[in-house]
Image (cartoon, rainbow, N blue to C red):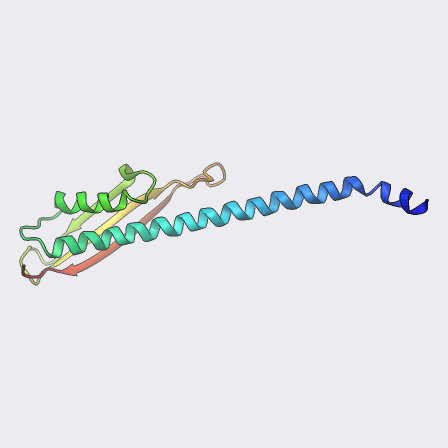
Length: 137
């Protein structure tokens, strides 16, 4: 009889501990998913910058901020990013021309809005950069 009376007051404590721990576990899981989303998005825009560079080094008549390269980068990034309208692409020719063996630089900037935007007030600005040397077709 003493055992039944002793355990009687512990039911609420177990429920409270379970509720607190479930809250903590769900918060950790959601933050892990958010960090994975950030890493995946950065990887995507970095690959999009590399794709734009690869496209630019094999084309003739490339100019600064070439619309063909910008379209290629946005199409590549559109496979994975949330909002392609937030993708900004800059194409520059640091050596001054588009003749081989001059270089081409492609910079991609993306404003990442977190899924947990209620807790993260400022969007994350990601920038990726790629550079390559033009080749003769």
